[in-house]
Image (cartoon, rainbow, N blue to C red; front, side):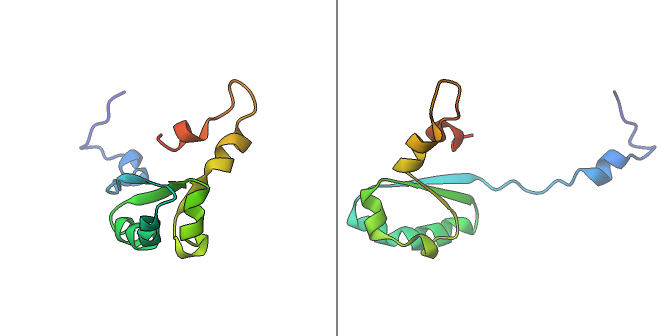
Length: 95
């Protein structure tokens, strides 16, 4: 299928070309440096779509309500996978 630009097209008006933000996945563990996570998420959110993946121990160093992004933790990995063919969280967040 070819579209003649001289004739105009509804395709041009239906498809907006927005700049695509990069995706940033921040991984945090049980380190005291995790207290800087909210600041890091805020800074990265200015130019990227941000998601956080954290260990159980990391959750002691930050408050979910301080983060304006999706946060995944260890339990979500195992709760979402029951049998072969089910989505695997650590793979899904990279897509």
